[in-house]
Length: 182
Figure 1 (cartoon, rainbow, N blue to C red):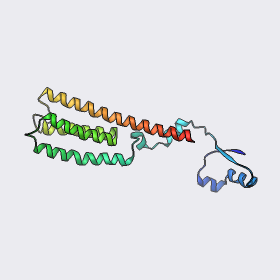
Figure 2 (figure 1 turned 30 degrees about the vertical axis):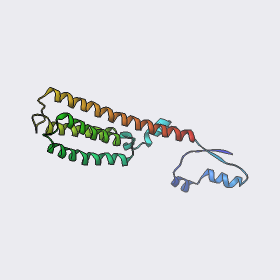
Figure 3 (figure 1 turned 135 degrees about the vertical axis):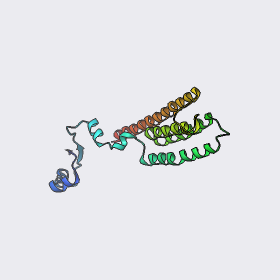
Figure 4 (figure 1 turned 180 degrees about the vertical axis):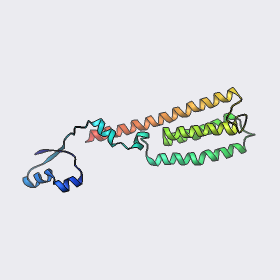
């Protein structure tokens, strides 16, 4: 016997009873009963959109990875700033930008688009404030420094977008695999 059954909450089944359970009891142990979910009036994309949490919409990465990326921002950025300010006489802006780029790429690879963009903005402001002439202002005297910081923004944004897109494709593939198995 094949039965179509709409999805109902456990509470609804307790209060109103289950037709599926009634049929199984009625036909006895010698008959196979297959239950097929009936489609609701809502389309599959609408159901998926409704079932997504806001966190999944912002980033398909796990909460654990997002927290790790935020911890990386909170610890690595200040630590790197302290180290580089003490080595200011020995390093130039290119070295500073490269080291911040390493941290921002690590954040983006861990947390995706939003943490990567946050880390990029923090790094740009920090680089501008502490390491570009005139120091301790948000102005830039050299056009070469403007180009270096502009390239920094483009690279970090590209990496962040790539990691986010990759995570979304991976989540989509996992959903497709689950659907195929079902």
